[in-house]
Image (cartoon, rainbow, N blue to C red; front, side, top):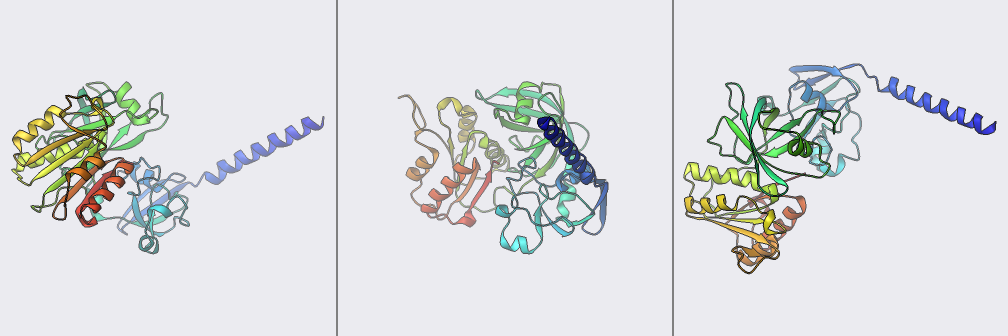
Amino acid sequence: MEVLVVSGIGAALAALVTAAEYFLANYGPCTITINDDKQVTTEGGGSVLAALTESKVFIPSACGGRGTCGLCKVKVLEGGGPLLPTEEPLLTDPEKNDAVRLSCQVKLRNDIRIEIPQEFFSIGEYEAECTRITDLTADMRLFRFEIMGDEPMEYVPGQYVQLLTPVYDKSDEEVYRAYSIAGDPADTGAIELIIRLVPGGICTTYCFEYLRQGDKVKFNGPYGEFRLSQTDSPIIFIAGGSGMAPIRCMLYQMRNEGITRQARYYYGANRIGALCLLDEMRRFEKELKAFRFVPCVPSAEADWQGQRGLVTEVVRRDVSEGRTAEAYLCGSPGMIDASVAVLKERGLTEDRIFYDKFA
């Protein structure tokens, strides 16, 4: 009998907790005032980032709202509650003092007043048709999306879009993920994305196992400040895997605009079969007279035409002095951090190293 009583009490407490969570979390309609001249009203309980996205106000976010990229920063002037431990590592002390928050971590529990850069209002949402899917490696594909409607998306090579994954049997909610634009910027009616399959990834699983030619997708953008400078400095490109995407787009830009800067592109993978678009890079070598492509793998057969070693090792061997160069990096955080360290060894200062870390 005592066990039954205890079990009954536990069940009652669980029911009370569930009910309390329901009523406490039912915040009702909340209003977000943006830059003191625009208001959106939505149901409370979710993140500020999600509420803004639902209202077609798009904020940069490369991690899908998981609090790891640190890009979705807004100023919270009123409301928003205290700064959370999940935000602290991604905000500088001046940002914290200036009321900057991560919009994906701020919950909408009451009316709130925020400030965002005015240019965010120019970010658009687009519908497109998937017209081509090309296998690049065992786990990377090139997707071509032709934009529907009369308004092409204007972007700068190096920028990215946020692709919407719809509800499907592996995900009960819509999810955004960020992908760098990989195509020719002269092709104004379409974008191309290089996507690597991540085991268990919601968006990559959808793209690899469910998305078909002829299907419609939505994305918003463009986002990001990663882009070529307007100087004549020599260029060092470093990328790994699907980090090929923005570098490919920049190479198209150099070809289209007749940019003659000296450039070397160090592209790394753990094996030859994981390198992509090698033939296309060789064509760029012919079209861009001052461009050299340097594929890198740790080990390879005797007839391998590229370099042996990790991409950072090859850069260390190949770049003797880089004080006059600029570097553009794209890939995993670990690869980028290691590359930055090597470039600094070779004389590059931080203000001449630009990168896009995949979150």
